[in-house]
Length: 352
Image 1 (spheres, one colour):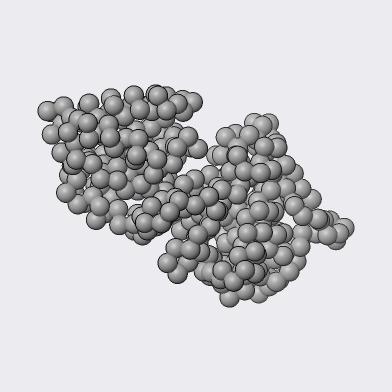
Image 2: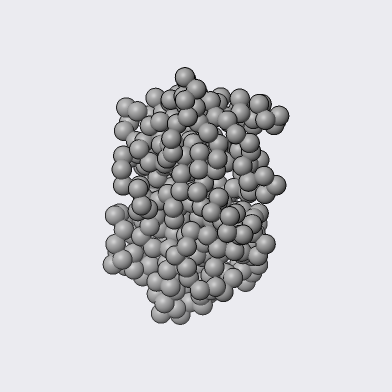
């Protein structure tokens, strides 16, 4: 039996590349033939996956050149463990992402830029990034607000001024969700640390912020962008802000990675593909790696799909054929034990 490993990262516990290295030997010990094809959706582990498939050495930088584009992983700048991200949710800022784009351009690393948006801890609607890119937020009295602007400052932003940033540079944005900006607090706020009693208030803030962004586009002679733009809620609204300011399209990250790395071709001849992530739930089927692997496998032919996950909750119909749960919080011992259980299930004669 040939098995293809195509997992996402596991929520900071281990990368997709590391997961393949952990699980592969367990499968081979059961006599299974194994190939690796680590995946990403633009979130955590995005750059390590691109580097793996390109045969590049690992790097801790938040960007790397990939062919003709400069790929950026927002999670490396704005993730939970990044500098300045240990403070309360609304005191965090996406400033570092905007600053990186400016610094890259100044250093001659011209785009186009490909920005992976998932896996951040921010919920500032992208206002911090836009301020770093040179747009100026003004309060209701027309006073300039000083950077870094945080989520807590967002409700004081009455207007933004300035020319469109990164002029002449195409910026593509890879989202790991389809959620619009105003739904981001309800969908992702709690996991970012937003208190439940603040969700409604932050939704109202983001709705008002979207109006500020619409007014800026109109003042600059740019066509409007719908507030319900799919993926606009990625990275706490950073997706929508960058789309508004740069004109860059929002793409679904996992399908982009699948096409770029040749996932469908890698499935040729496979009997089973194993995917996985830290938490498997309904959102896993809204543009993330698990859904992309499932769709690709169904399109290719009679390939079973197994999922090795940390947690599994309320799965919709049509999900993976096999699910093995390691348990949470992540622990290497539990993860390896779950990999052994999955290997044993796949190696059973009835599985062949």
